[in-house]
Image (cartoon, rainbow, N blue to C red; front, side, top):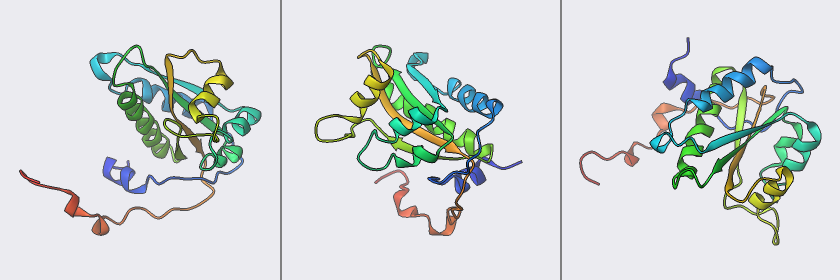
Length: 175
């Protein structure tokens, strides 16, 4: 059994995937883990759109001018959205859920990559959020945080070297 620290060391952003579908039981574990993630006042503003359809993954790969293209070859995308009327900290709540899904994917020996949507643009005229909102016909109250690409890795990334961590970022008692 892998320790949580080992899981953190080995979780790296994966942008290349094998052409192999992610099994439904693994998708279920990833999404159920997200449903257990903490949320302010247990408001649970997050929701998740599971995408396996190649045409929709292609459309999602065009949600940013760069940084979303790996979705073309990804067998699975999860769009992380949140109902902004349920919580004023929907951004934080959805972020926690997204990283929990990434860690669960890593534990299942899947790779993942966070594709930032919130605050990004598809082009000069359209925000990434509005592009995705239109694709899924989402009501205005729903905000789009990110898309997670998930699949079996087709690249190897070295784990973090713990002796290279910048421990000057840790302060004790005072800054």
